[in-house]
Amino acid sequence: MTGSVPPSPADPLLLGVDHVGLAVADLDQAVRFHTDVLGLVLLHREENDDQDIVEAMLGGGDATSGTQIQLLAPRSPHSVLATFLDRSRPGLHHIAYRVADVESAAQTFRRRGLRLLYDRGRPGTRGSRINFVHPKDAGGVLTELVQPR
Ligand code: CMX
Ligand code: CO
Image (cartoon, rainbow, N blue to C red; front, side, top):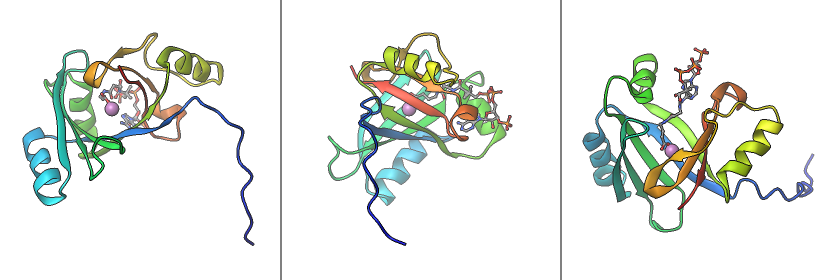
């Protein structure tokens, strides 16, 4: 049976998909694959001391407005990315939603019974503030909340 789906009530909490995070062992090699083979555009590279990772952001044809791809590699054996790659394969790591205010979004999700990984937002890419919903509380998907700078 077909039919129109009634619009769900407006919930301005998640503004859109900001990026999809991929765990990689070798950042340079992964950047080469995503640019030279897939044809994405390299937009940004950064080391995140707080997360102990090196990362690159890539975009498609509408590089400045579309959802981006975040390649993540461990910077040391203590990085959460090292733990992830030890346990799993390289590949999908998390999905990140843009929010207007990471503290109020986190508080709303706590009230809805989800575990947030941090008490307060931490530094993310390009001066953003980030927090995460534990994957066990989000259908097996590590879910990042990003408040852009
Ligand atoms: N996606 C889905 N499930 C995941 C996962 C992921 N990325 N990482 C771990 N898990 C699962 C494990 O498979 C494990 O499941 P089982 O118990 O069924 O085996 C469970 O979660 C383990 O949970 P845990 O023992 O509480 O914690 P871990 O040591 O595995 O760490 C996590 C998991 C999410 C707490 C850790 O990765 C973390 O702190 N992540 C947030 C920071 C981060 O990911 N930074 C990199 C990205 C930075 C950015 O985006 O800018
Ligand atoms: Co991310």
